[in-house]
Image 1 (tube, rainbow, N blue to C red):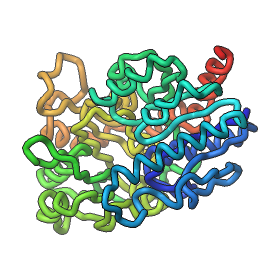
Image 2 (cartoon, one colour):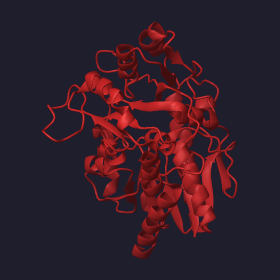
Image 3 (cartoon, rainbow, N blue to C red):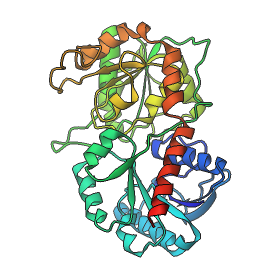
Image 4 (tube, rainbow, N blue to C red):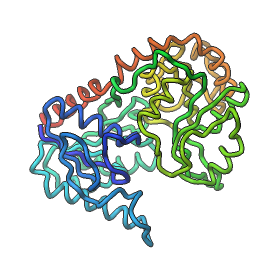
Length: 380
């Protein structure tokens, strides 16, 4: 099958990428190529992926272009250009798979596409995203794929479900685990609420508060989108036990190998999210390394983590009081995180690893998409 990917334009697609959406595209493309498919990627000129054909639509990633007077115009112009380029070349492909950020802009051209079209919705399903996808849904020329059941319910439109997968031969346990620290990996964002207060979507502040309560070491890795966020919420807490191990930079600069070592040597991975996580690739990366995940019950978490088996699921403070028998840990918020860490020895790291092997590998993801592709092509 000849498959075209419409890639997001913020960053290049490369084997070394650690950004979630790009990582999934990389793994999926490589898995499809391994299965004998031809994959072409409409993306940045500096993208590269063994076995895939790169069709450049922008000199380099939007995040790395020189400053312009109006970034919104620059970004949307390149996204529109990428869509037009795919449209011009559509007859060269059996199927087009849209991974663009944002997902809905290429869909505005659906009426002119005759090649079967699939759109994976990678982003959190906000009311605005649902509105945009609902508006173009009337054209009935794309099949949506959601990456969790939680996201599919929030989308409230007909959609297939394919979970993300990772290379379980890369993310492996360290049998001589020497670390004894808690780990947080995630972006430290620039988004603010209507009152101008930072929104800590990935929950680094709760991770810090938890480690401080226990007096345990916490290692923090991630890109810092706004230095003020770092100055307010992270820097004042840095100490002998609270360590920022990545650079203070808007882009993640740690290698995959460095991040893997952090997972392997951690005793627990903290994921106290404050948004409706559509999937959470870091959870399966950590579990593949045998590291238990302790996460707030938002978005996809209850689909990814097996409570009491591969980690612990904690109700956030603003959730209704948990029903009897809902989760192993009854305490909520930071108190729940603290209790879970005290009980982390109950989790078998080998079973944690096996859970990923059975459910969240590249092979599982590729097989899921191949089924979707088959359905879409048969409908034509």
